[in-house]
Length: 160
Image 1 (cartoon, rainbow, N blue to C red):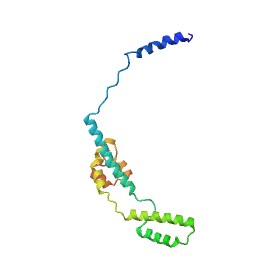
Image 2: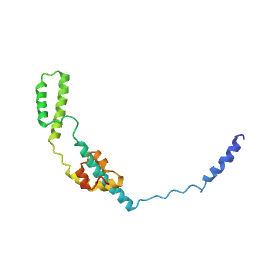
Image 3: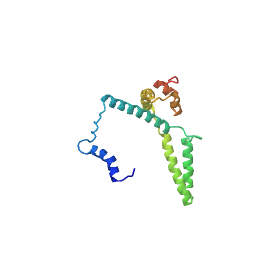
Image 4: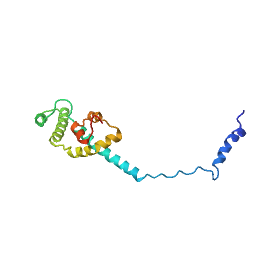
């Protein structure tokens, strides 16, 4: 068969005519969420928020690898930097100033008491339903650093 204008029109014209005039596809009906669905979504967001806040706090306060610095050792290093600064060449002075700023920030962070009790209470309240909804195991919580006593308070056991 040779493809010319007449053959092409024969195959495409019926399709074009279907959409001309009043034979357009119907608009889809707008779907609305039920109040139960909205409530379930809100509950899921609340559970997720409680878990996320606690895990982020754990991550931020996790001990770093290596030898722990004490406030005394930081203060001692700050004193050494203060005595070395005036006699240092400009490039070394720049590095010492940055180290001093970093050490002062670390000292402030060490002296600030981190209170996880509020976040822990919220986590204990939401962890069990969150685990059930998402299929999270005891081992997964432990892998992220959640302490066994906190999991026990939340009602999450090794058995499931």
